[in-house]
Figure 1 (cartoon, one colour):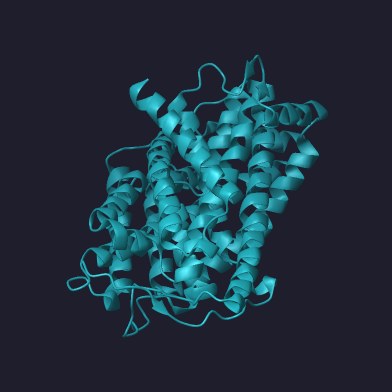
Figure 2 (cartoon, one colour):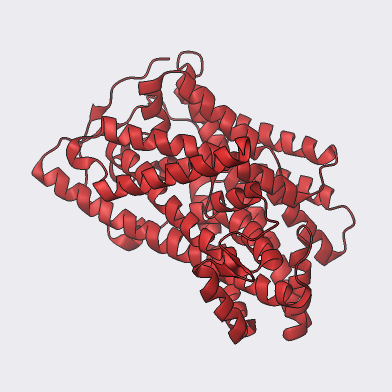
Length: 460
């Protein structure tokens, strides 16, 4: 493994804010199908809104984690994977490949999408629908402009889906439901505080980890910084489609800028804008979506049936929405959720293929040449699709169990890389560019939280 030192280049001034909006839509889309659409509404439908405080804290934790990932790439123009491998050696890329493949090999999200779509259109084999969806995902990512296609699709979906969910929640939730939401933000539920009896710690930690993208997927923000050419990411390597010829003279290693008064001023402008972009798109939109979907599930399911098994709560929800409005509204709700889950699976597969392909090149750049990075990306993409199809053919048909298992495994990976990214930024960045004391304090709090809950689950 040969990783060169970081070079020096010019830090150009940031563009207008509206031109910078984009990467956080993908990360938001990654979270929609895991925590926002499935786990938190499921928990709210079965245990009430007394646990919703954890969703807000969870997405807040991820905001600060993501900003430290963005900080490193904004400054150095390379992914955090390259920075960690430079300091830790081969163990780092091997860990990231394994900790990405194992938690994300379970096709729970796409199966949830397939079950909803199959139900709406009267199809008896949702597993076959899921397989078709997986092949379609591979086709879209193989023959389109990988990043631009994904960003456009997520923007359209979020601009349509989030307002519709907001309108439904405002229109259908009653005064008592809103009061339950307010109490839940303080940790007060029906005869419990913070965590209800009967909720396993593994499910709770998994949902907490999925208050946003979750797992190693947050680390993909490094790639999206390069694709959007934020800061020094302008000089980074990008993924191309199978139809486009790979560029030559590519490099995993990034470039940084000299520390002087002018560059520090320019960096602070970049830092201010990307914080605002991530806050508005990822945190504010994501938190609002979680709260409204959970409120809707609580109002439509918990208040009427006191819960439902698996993803059946979505069908209960749709039936009650139809009963309170018009029959087609419930159908539209199921179709919209199904489409959002499909595009979440698409974003998941893009992120995992990016992570695995880059870390493969990091292991041995002589054998796995950087010029072939796009080929490795598509190889990992289709390998994951084939693996997902095998899992489906073996008869795994309970998507909620698959999503919960994946979420718990990803919570453990978050503990590892939060420590690693904090250490990387503190050790390698110039003093003027390191996180301020209160950001470091928040990251330490996140580490202690995940360590405590993981320890209780594994050894309690």
